[in-house]
Amino acid sequence: DCYSQNDKNFYQVVRENRPVREYYDIDLEGKETFDDIGDVEFQTISDFIFYRNELASELGCVRLHRSDLIVLSSSHSRKISLHIFSKISGFQDIYHHKYFGIKLKQKMNSVDVAVYSKNRAMRLLGNSKLGKNYILKSLNNEKIRIEDTLIELPADAPNFKIHSFPIVTGK
Image 1 (cartoon, one colour):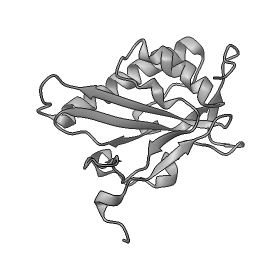
Image 2 (image 1 turned 30 degrees about the vertical axis):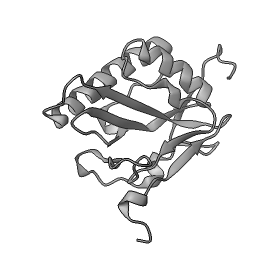
Image 3 (image 1 turned 180 degrees about the vertical axis):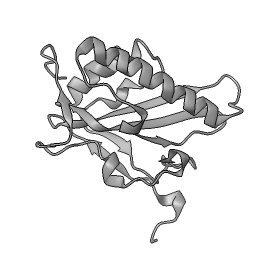
């Protein structure tokens, strides 16, 4: 490697008006410390799937199962931080995803909807935020290819169900 782990601060830029993989940034900060990070992460993912699928049913979107998700973590004793990516569904663009994300946040407050804005920088697998030591890595040491966590999809993503909503106009 030509970079030390402390220097790996690489991001992907989410551009507007492009199809995007369904992706979520979920953050839980405790008033104290999280004693069993694995248990809290497991419960957070279970809650996410429940609330996300409840909303998907309401809006006519495809339901997701745990096997349809890639989950990355940079959690530590004071913060649960998960990035969740779908292997099978996406949205017409970030504005359609933001619409879904805002509705999901009403059910699950830990969903960060700030990530659905144009030119948003999202940390890449194996990287940390500048000045931090918490590396974004696969949960349970699953083998993940970095391209499976890229948010922007090709216009003809044949294996993805792409959702859109008629009331979304952008920005």
